[in-house]
Image (cartoon, rainbow, N blue to C red; front, top):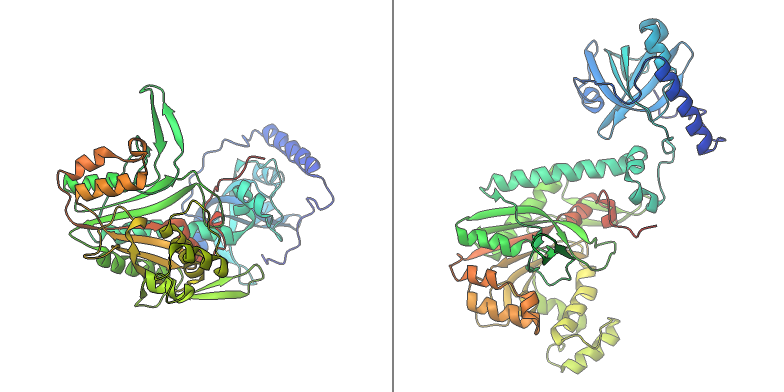
Length: 494
């Protein structure tokens, strides 16, 4: 059946209430026929997408799916059946099925779920199809589908009613299918390198592993405050102390902070740790992993990002080797070679010249970081490992010998940080000092002293990484906002 088929008459001139009323009449007719409109069991032998992908004529098959299109020619009908992974054409002839099945079909609407059994054939126009021999009604849709020809384009509707978005926009469905398969491939990639997947608590007594505002809750039975985790890092390092040498977790993190095209309060992270490694080893692994995902799911290392008019706005080149650059050199490249030689007050004045907003309460390293984020990070699209990062920014990483920087990379792609990686700090005394300094007088609330005690039992030197999965998927699939790659993004209540 051609995609140029005109939309059925269900209703350009009917209100939604009218359409629902008609569907409820058909619901009643199905029950009069002795058909449960919501309860039939059905066992498919394959899916519409798989059947079409591996199609051959003359095969007996049983498939199920939603009805996406109908072309009724009286005593015969062509229709499209499918799900998010694929669709195929079905063909019904009044003489080819039972009288009951024909009566049931007459009460089928777009959006209903049906099961069919029949034999495959190719139409005269070359369309792979299934000639239906029996029909099983699976579920009645009481509300109409989104318009097939226009889909759901209002962004708020897409995010609030993802089910409608998935029905009407195959591009959206493809993104989430790809995301799911990427997660499986990441697991496979790490398993092949002898990493063990673990699970750590989402409810934590002290929110550690990152500098972020947590969501707070209360456990009634224990009568104690808890927070949703902002990162799993401190628990994963406990496992290194316990004897695990390669661990990872694909986890949900929660940060009670702003929402933007790059931020959602609930997000997915990969964290992985390798005993006896360092940040350079972890950088190599991340580079290899991301390129592997790009080649497998995009078929190329050159990723095009397009605007709403399908015009290419940039091409991200993931070709190896990826650039390495010193943090201070990058900042000087946008703020001037003397930026670190002038006074902190002069640096603040320089921010005004650069158009970088800062606040009075920012410490000097935070001022510098603001320049980095606004003038370097947001304008870096091809991969760049930023190294020699100031120690104040990363209290959980080893300090570079003889310096004030840490053994860290920050991987920037597509104008945002995709992944940090550390040579992990395993000296408990230094770790205590740095966490207490970061806490700024709120040690009891912000410092996990049980973690410090754990380190005193001895943690091997290790390399660690974090990868923001949502941002990685955005970059690889060309999505303009994080909400396009999260099935149910957080939205303000209507």
